[in-house]
Image 1 (cartoon, helix red, strand yellow):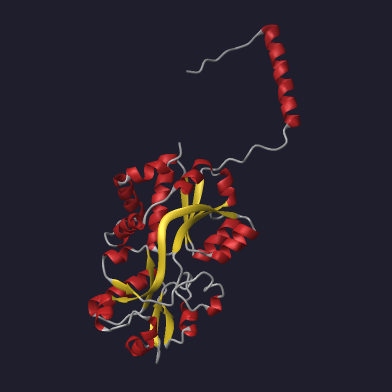
Image 2: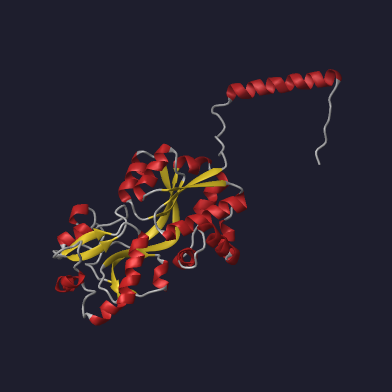
Length: 319
């Protein structure tokens, strides 16, 4: 309980004078202004795949429910999200796939962003065929045999070459270089989105249509259908250093979170929560599956997961 006290007479005048002197001295000796406080808003970039959206939804729900922040989301491509750190439009990227060029530009050179640590997801990018093709065509999952089967994958868009179906052209991808440098008789055809890739994989499985495609984990679809990864030449450190000369598989990715330097400096408990956020591929797939298969909104899927998994997220919340 707060009690109000009124001072009167000479003692009050002396105390008032002393306080005025102290305030004047403090203002004269202060070397810098106090740190800027946050406005209570966290701006999260939403990259174009459902797993990312699932991670952002859970993080955003906890920021709002547990810490009282307002969360603003903006749909952006991966590269555009990094530009948002410089413009001030983005505070957080929840799931970053490598992006070494952007790290060099925005973290090392411009110093407008920093890593906020790993998010716990283990990323895999690769080439995949449906399980039935791996069963029917011996050796098709060995890249050295792909030319032998190229005619199976011809489409109207690929002409005399086999079709390699890629996703959104803004994704992390080395496929055109890999095909060229390995001498494969294939043409990259961009489907345009994760949803288009998923529809193609479902159709190829259900109708037994040939399909060679770009795909990745974490990915909820692997709980629904079986795809088999093609063995490209093994990744070795530096084999992808020159984007034009890549002739190897994708590296394993330990996905991380990137935040603006300003957000790291003044984001307070919101930044602490982002830094603490870490979960597994299975956790993400559960939320993403509820969104993609069960028709839940991102918000409702996040709330469902949060209600069932307090033991996972309670230690993310700063005290």
